[in-house]
Length: 325
Ligand code: SF4
Image (spheres, rainbow, N blue to C red):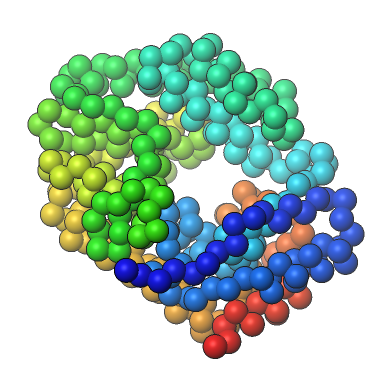
């Protein structure tokens, strides 16, 4: 049985009204509580988004995953961040789609989302308005899935299915301490011929730009499904572009043997590479990129050519302590 790190579980909520000095002090205090052994097994469970964050920006990973920091932005910061509109319309659209695929209509799904997210102060009228504008596209998706189920003889449909595998690629419970890689599948359909279809909903993006960026995520989902349903022989991935109202997929097919032999190795190899590069750097540095648009720490993180680290500079320097011993 593997030994694991003992992660911090309690969130550190930092409000925008904190002075810069208090903000930094609280961050440094929290950093000193972090104990992490930089080992892919001990840092498990991994997920696609966790791996992506770890390899895209070590600082964001440190703040979110190791220190469990949650930042409460000001109204002005919320307004300035267009990505919040995308983030929340995506979240709500996922919920409505889940309800619709399970048999409800758009209005019922929408009402269910309103009640689920009624306590979230960041979800304003603009966001709800944007979601009502999705009705025709979500309805079209539901109709296509229903047609698809009849045409291809489906035997099982699951939404938001939580699946996990251990470090040998064997199925384990999602919350098992032996879970190495896990994920929540938006929508999966098993057919009577033992083929499986996975659909991942993306709020942004376009089928015109291809799906290269989503390949790793789809392969991870194929691994989870195949390990958990031994009867599956092939997995066919699809991406549903919510805003565009299109579905990509049907041409790429993953064979069971390839999924089980290669996809877990590929995940481990990406992780090992990311850890090696972090150890070489010796600190949790910031790394700017597209992910900054969706990062809650953007307001305090002066990214750009000089990459000063902004408010986080002392934290980045102090993070060297996590590499000692
Ligand atoms: S804003 Fe960008 S560089 Fe800064 S922590 Fe977030 S992802 Fe990293």
